[in-house]
Image (cartoon, rainbow, N blue to C red; front, side):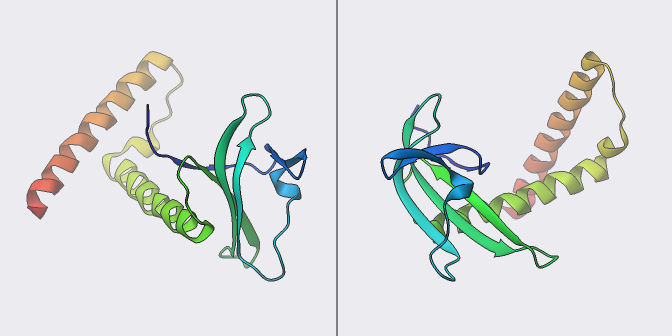
Length: 138
């Protein structure tokens, strides 16, 4: 479909590197580096595709190291991939805040039909608020 993507994957996914398959979480950073470009590697053992794989690490709010394994079909360097992926958090925070503001966070729905109606209502409200925000910006 020729859609560019960048996704964060778990460290237990295997890539083919150095003549054998290895899990991403077994690969190490060189020295004190915070980012590492692994290159275009055959990714995923079940359905291998050659994708650009990077590793990035940073400290979280508690001071612990967090490692991001990022996979893309675009030739992004580790720094570019981490910067692009970091935009995701502001979008998720916006959805979370909107969910609370509209009252959907308090919903405890057990039936799939009721959940799908609630989700449709949330999607319609999101579209309406996005259209309103766009008009206000223009």
